[in-house]
Image (cartoon, rainbow, N blue to C red; front, side):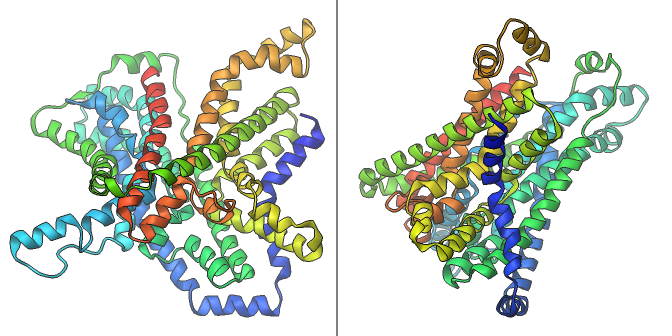
Length: 531
C-alpha cells in the first residue's frame, strides 16, 4: 500500500475519535450552559451509576474468571476436560440477549414467579426486580468473565503448575500454594481481563437501555436522539473516551507484566508436574465452580429463549426473518472483506517498511476496538453535520445515514483492529528470512505478498474475516443509528422486539445470533486444545 493511501486509511479510522476531541473547539457560552445543566442534573447520575456498575462487574468477572481458570489449570477432577472449552460458551451470548432471557423468565408475569404464586398461594412480587443495577451486574458478569478466564488460564498454565509442584516439595500446604504462588502469577492477567470486560461494559447499550440504567452510553444516545443536542452528546462521549483510554492503558500495562522469566527447563518441568488430583467434596466444589458460570451464562439463557420461541412458533415472523438475516449477512460480509483487506495492507506495509511512521499508523488504526460504538456514532455524525452546514449541496448526511457507507465505515473503525491483530499474529510466524530469499529471487512488492506471504497467511486471513463477521453480526449501538433505511439487522430487531415486550418474536433472531457466535468460540476452543 502506498504511503499516501496508508495514512488516508488510518485517517479515516481515527476520524471519529479526532472529531469528538475537536468538538470542544465549539465550546462557547451555549455549550458551557449545557454542560452546567448536565452537571446539575444527569451527569452525577451517569458517573455514579457507571462507576458502581464497573466496580461490581470488576469484582464479579475477576472472581469468577480467576476461580474457573484456577480450577481447570491447577486441579484435576471429573469433567475438567469438558469445562476447559465449555467455559468459553458465554462468549457466544451477546449480553443483551442474556438480559432479555432472564427478564422474560424472572419478571413478575414470568413463568417462575407465576408458578411460585400458584404453589405457595402468595401474591405480589416474589423476586427482586430483574431490570435493575443488580440485574445488569449479573448479566455482565456471566457474559464477560471469559475474558478473565482466558488470560488467567494462559498465565497459570505457563508457570503455575510447575512452581506449585516445587512449593509442594518444599512442604507448603495447598492453600498456601494457591495464595502465594498461583494468585500472584495470575494477577496481571486478571487485571488485563477485567479491563477488557469493563470496556465492553461501558460500551454496552442494549442492556443499559433495556434495564433503564443511566450509564454514559445510554446518556449519549439520549442527548443526541431525544434531546437533539450534539454538543452534549460529544461532551459525554469525550468523558467516556477518557475513561476507556485509562482502561486501555491499564490493560496494556497488565499485558506487559504477564511475561515471566524462566530457564530453558521451565516448560519441560511444567509438563512433568501434574495438576492436583481432587476427590470427594473438593472435587464437587471445583465442579460447581465451573458448572455454575456455564449454566447462568449460556445454558439457562438458551433454554429461557427457547420457551417463548416454542410457545409463539405460529406467530414467528419467518418472512421478515429471512430479510433480517440477509441484511445482517450482507453488512457483516462486506465489513469483514474490507476490514480484512485493510488489515493485510497495513500489516504488509509494516512488514516491508518497519519504521516509526508505519508502526505509529498501525497503532492508531488499532485503537478503534477500544472505542465504544456510541462514541464512533457521535464521531462520524459530527463532521457530517459540519460538512452539511458548510456545503449543503454535497448531500453528506444522505450518504452517511441513508446508505451503507456510514455503517460500514463505523464497522471498519470498530473492528479493523480485530483483523489487524490476527493478521499480525500470522505474520509473526513467518520468518523474515523468507522475505530476503524472495527478494534475491526477484519477488518484491505485490509479488512478495502474493507468492510468499499469502499462502502462509490464508488461515490467519480466514480467522480474521470470521471474527469480524461475527462481531459485526452482534454489534448493536452503531447499527441502531447508522443502518440504512429498511435494512434492519438481527441485532436491531432483537433489541426492538424485546423493547416492545415481544420476547416471543425476539427469541428467533436472538438465538440466530447465538448460533453465529458459536463459530469463533469453537475456533478458539480448538486452538486452546491444540496448544
